[in-house]
Length: 220
Image (cartoon, rainbow, N blue to C red):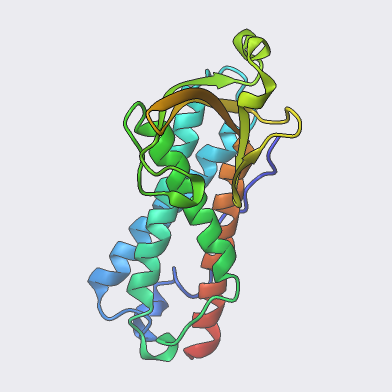
């Protein structure tokens, strides 16, 4: 089970009314927009935490719901960041863990595109070999009986590093797909873990706190 996600109640620079007076935002409009997106992030985190141990949640609806929540958090983060980095005091802001953030972003984008867009071709995520040659047709939980009947060589694993051969069955779910190459095709099962979705959110919440600290110490 995934660890509880940290909430954003500890932000002290981004979401205070006094932020307007201290010049963090260019105008009231930007401030109001940021507050709306911060509220959206807070609600999504709360919903993800509730979904951790929701035994009545059915697959694949629960997976798709978590994907949507994580996507809303990521999109909101970038809109918040865009609003606050207008400030001259942090115009050169660089996040020290930017590479980890980009890994998380690439994973979520590829997974969302592959799962939510199936059975469409996915061709924008070459790191994951989603170059238009792989078409997703279904989703299975790892406990599905049909998986036990399939050849081991047809299974792969997807994480932040890309897609690789599966060494053992520790995945939560599988994306059933067909790989088309050189006028031939074969079926594959790409497994992944729900925990990775939570890890994406964890990294973005950490980045939001880092941005907040930068604002706190740069603007007095």
